[in-house]
Amino acid sequence: RLQVYVVDDGSANVGAVAAVHASYAYDPRFTIILLPSNVGKRKAQIAAIRRSFGDLVLNVDSDTEIDSDVVSKLVRKMQDPAVGAAMGQLKASNRNDSWLTRLIDMEYWLACNEERAAQTRFGAVMCCCGPCAMYRRSALLLLLEQYETQFFRGKPSDFGEDRHLTILMLKAGFRTEYVPDAIAATVVPDTLLPYLRQQLRWARSTYRDTLLGLHLLPSLDRYLTLDVVGQNLGPLLLAISSIAALAQLALTGTVPWWTGLTIVAMTLIRCSVAALRAGELRFLGFSLHTPINIFLLLPMKAYALCTLSNSDWLSR
Image 1 (cartoon, one colour):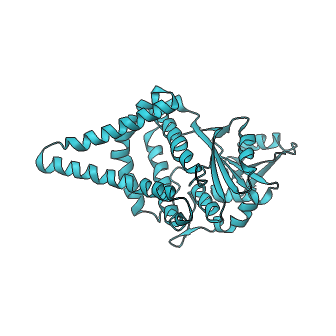
Image 2: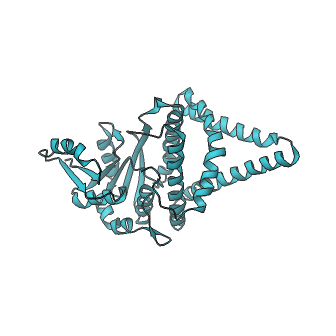
Image 3: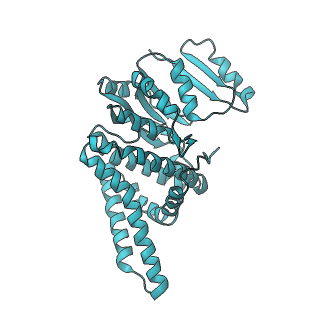
C-alpha cells in the first residue's frame, strides 16, 4: 500500500497551487501538508515522516521523476532487516539542455556506478542521495531527534540532510545500499553559477559529515577508510600539484610538462574506463570536467573548508 505525502514548504504562491492541492483532496492515497512558513527540506521531511505510517519511507525531491518500478525495486532491497536505507541511480532529466547538463549527467553516472556501487559491496553507501532514497521507518524514528537537532559550531545545520541521515543510519548499525536499476531523473543546474553554488553547499556538508563519519570508519570495512581518505586527500593533492605548477611557471617561465601530462593521462584513463563500462563514447567528453575541477571546483572547495559555519542554502 502506498501513501503519498506532498509537503508544501511555505510557498509564497500558495494560491497558484491551490487548484493542484484541491485536485488530490478526495484521493485517500494523498495527503497535502501545508507548512505556514519556509523551514527547509529537513523539517519538511520530518513533518511528513511524523504523519506517515507503514514500514518504509521513500523521499523524492520536488524536481525529480522516478521510474514506475522504482518503489518495487527499492522495497525488494529493504526486505533485508539489516538494511536501513537504499538509494536509486540518478540521471539528469534535462541532460540535453546544455554542455554543463551533459557533464553533470556523466558526473552522476560516475558517482553512482563507481563510488556508490563500490561502497554498496561493503554495505555502507556513505550518502544516500535525496532525490530518490528509501528508509526504514523504524530506524528513522530512532534517529529523528538527532537528525532534527544537528548543530555545527553552535548553529543549526540546515543542509546536507542526505549525507547526515545516511551517516546516522550507519552509526546505528544499519546497512545502506545502492540499487542501480531503480532510476530517478532529477533537474540539474544548466548554467555555471547555480552549479558552483550547489557544489559549494555540498562541499560544506561533505566536510561537516566527514568529520562525523571519521569515528564510524573503524567499524566499517577498511576499503571505506581508503575511499573516504582518498576522496578528501585526492583533491588536496591535485590542488597542491596545480599550485606548484603555476608557481614554477611564474618563477621560471617554464611549463611543468610532467604535471600536465600526468593530469591528462589520468583523465583519459578514467574517462576511457567509464566509456568502456557504460558502453557510451560520450564519456570521453567528460575530460572537459577536469579544467572545471582544477580551476573552479578546487578553489571553491578550499573556500568551503574555510567557511564551514556558513549555512546559507545559496539557491533559494
